[in-house]
Image (tube, rainbow, N blue to C red; front, top):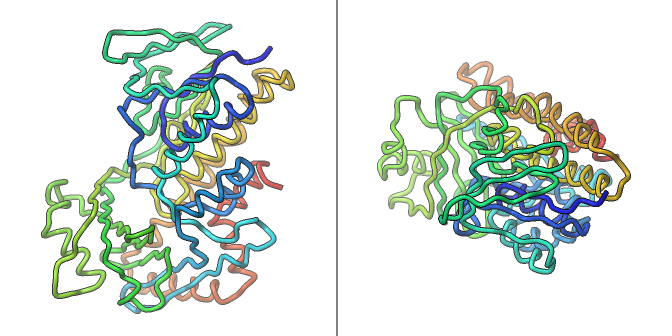
Amino acid sequence: MAIKQVIVAGAGPVGMLCAFRLARAGIPVTVLERGTDLAEDLRASTWHPPTLDMMEELGLADDIIRMGLIARYVQYRDRRSGTVAEFDMDLLRGETGHPYRVQCEQFKFTRLVYERLSAFPHCRVLFGARLTGFEQDADKVTVIMDRGNGSERLEADYLIGADGAWSTVRRVADIEFEGMTYPERFYVATTAFEFADVLPRLSYVNYVADTEEWFLLLKVPGSWRCLFPTRVDETDEEVVSDARTQARLQGVHPRNEPYRTLHRTIYAVHQRVARKYRQGRVVLAGDAAHINNPLGGMGMNGGLHDAMSLCTALERIDRAEADESALDGYERQRRPIAIEYINASTQRNKKVMEERDPEARRRSQEEMCRQAEDSVRAKEFLKKSSMIDALRAAGQLR
């Protein structure tokens, strides 16, 4: 039987992609967003090659590339020695139609998709719509929401919880979010200062390891995003203060005048995966299903891969090509990747970046340089770090 309605909780990248995929397939969809507008979230900006391939299938890749920066090279630097291991993503040519990363902030993507959704009269996005609960039976799920005038109820065939790390859908479903939260937080200071003018051979994506304070430099159009770990004993106010912000940025490159920052953001860092992705007619995707530290740029990409897998399952159900067991197939396909690949890889990345032992740090950097200089080993590294291997293991890529 054709699906009459899908409700998506959350208008972030994952929720909006779900809405777009389903609307293109002719499935009526309603997105509930608790905010009064699309969020201007500055956290995620990296688009990996296979994600761009998926977006090309939907006619979105060209716009993402136009709004962003093509990053052919990825660098792993040692802050003390100055050595650079540079990986050329063009080695992935033949493995993907996009042998590079693109640096494009996620809020640009949600705006793009929101504009495209206007072409589908059977899709609507409700702002200021806070999901407060749901009920379900064998035939439907009833969502309870508040738009400021008391509770309203909407019925649907399925509910997708794409409402982020603090997911109300996951909480109401009483699904455990297994994992841990790091004691330190991450701090991102964004500045228009052009680091490439003063740091030799700088690429658009730079992981800078150090025994005292590692950092990440990412170029996006018009600015650099500088990510630092905080000390456990620092308060949020101390971290974002002018004094601490300037100290960290001056540590990247000393200059006589202070840095002017465009944005300052501090956030907790987690490694968690939901115990299950499905409860009857309710399914989790993206940060509602799994969260990880950002080292490797796998969070948003993994969430978008969830959306593609989940929407394929729903489209098959809509066309009567599969029954609801296809949703269990979605969980079997995506949850192991979150545990065994995304969380495991990002935890390893963090451990390498923050290695405190100078000798171990030296050996790690030397090995990274040898790997980058060997085209065969470098390609294998890039297939893993760009998530190609994970998607092939999940059966989402040939």
